[in-house]
Image 1 (cartoon, rainbow, N blue to C red):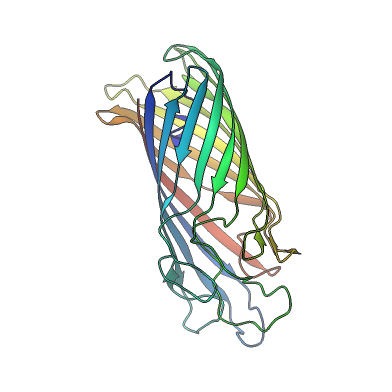
Image 2: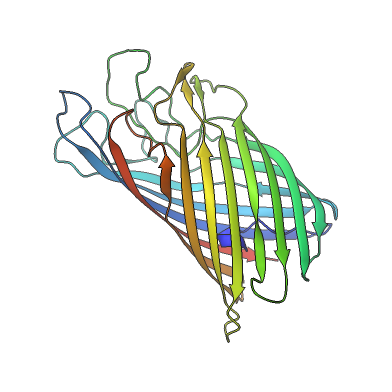
Length: 304
């Protein structure tokens, strides 16, 4: 299981169903400089996310798999400042707001995968190519939180569970398994691109996700392994009403360490990631001085 990705590096034979689930928690400790004279103080807080990500892979044939996944969870803001703000407050995505719909669900994905090469449970190569659709939920922002058209700024929210746009997806996976360390290594590349603006005139940014990883067996009584990975996440520009969204373009590097064991319920993986921004910043109010400290924790299970 490459750095906790329960549905990567594996193909299901015809008629077989593989199950996976990921529980992901992320903590973003953020800040930015004062925005205007109405709020002449530094803004800071924590944006916490807890997601349950169930996944299913079904073998339509030995060469074609159907992969389904969804996101269930909550995103919450903790406002650290004593002063009140129209931009931030302590709240969650389960609460309705003037420019945000509440909800438990994030995006869902339907992907068809072609198994070009799969050496099964033995040593060898796994080469998989796929394409599909990302489907947004109703938990979205319903109006521009940056007021890019020049209207009077009122209370607003910047975050939701869903990206808000239908997207097409292309993915490539290439992994190798062998009987010596590194036992399992390779990577995947995923590209997501919005199809069109949603009904609230928002066009989500395109996303490019590259991940490389290697797993080293420890040869202990627990049959455990240590995995090391690094990811590159490139986000393009998002748009509200055809106007470019501030700070939506970014590039981050995400090193990850994982601990894997075989358990009665399946392959179990514990992962810690520390994203760093190389370009751009955590998306907040716009083009002002700002920063963030981000940690991600994931527990993944895969049952074959």
